[in-house]
Length: 358
Ligand SMILES: NC(=O)c1ccc[n+]([C@@H]2O[C@H](COP(=O)([O-])OP(=O)(O)OC[C@H]3O[C@@H](n4cnc5c(N)ncnc54)[C@H](O)[C@@H]3O)[C@@H](O)[C@H]2O)c1
Image 1 (tube, helix red, strand yellow):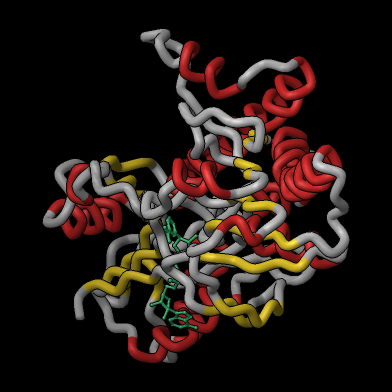
Image 2 (tube, rainbow, N blue to C red):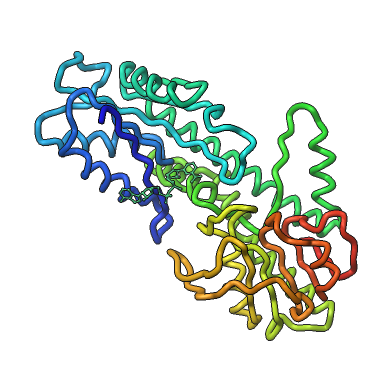
């Protein structure tokens, strides 16, 4: 092939530090087969410097025939291959934007690599946005995701304050969203999930340490977002005690375990932490999710639970809405459940003393 695109996972390891093993192993597998003139593009989300400091040396050292990545500082020769970074931009579950309409940022190791990558992606995407280096493209992706992470944390914190003040944060956000400039709505929830937003910011905070720099917004946002599952569990406990029930021994049905609505992705889902915390406090937890007939073992959990049908919700002490899948009949659920704790405002417009929004 003339072009090789690498888009393997970039998770955190057990110390919450970047785990680049998927990239390095893939690079080692590619290197012996490289030939002059080929283009290698990394798409995995990662810290600025990965392409140049990690990927390129493995490709150069591993090809065994002296091939070098083309740089602007070297005279173009016949023993060169080309390298670029181009972040993946995806919004799982969002069909409103065609993939070709999502502009593609491209940063080559030299101008020729940028041009080649732009030509390649130009056959697929309507707009290619060239930037001056792979590191700029890497940082662009992180800025986009950190922007989301920090703003979600901000709205989560304001939700906690609004709850204390007796204000409905959802009503506040809807009103603020009418401002035609300078405001973009973000929504609170039970915590962050998915492979990107809870993970990517830590790639930058790890790299920042090498520059003797503390990324305080990232740390604070992480602290707030990761405290949300604990907030949800204390809400359930408080709501039960208002009905003179204890969390210990209560039957709780968790509705939705995917990290966001209408998708089949469980990675880093806050539902997993919430289920574990509820179980630790003695609750009898069941779950329903049309996308997951079974929850087994993952990197950070081992639940071994089977999906329960949502038939008779009256048999539970609490129905906890964690993910607001479109399939659920929220009105019917609110009518028959003795207590509904709603972390997503899925019950908006439905009234009842048995509904607690948290
Ligand atoms: N999923 C998204 O919505 C999304 C959005 C933007 C950026 N990203 C980034 O894209 C990258 C990939 O994420 P993903 O969600 O597609 O991951 P994924 O877990 O779906 O894996 C992607 C592919 O990598 C392959 N793979 C895994 N290990 C491999 C190995 N050792 N060698 C070769 N191939 C291997 C898998 O088989 C799979 O086809 C990550 O860096 C992620 O942060 C993902």
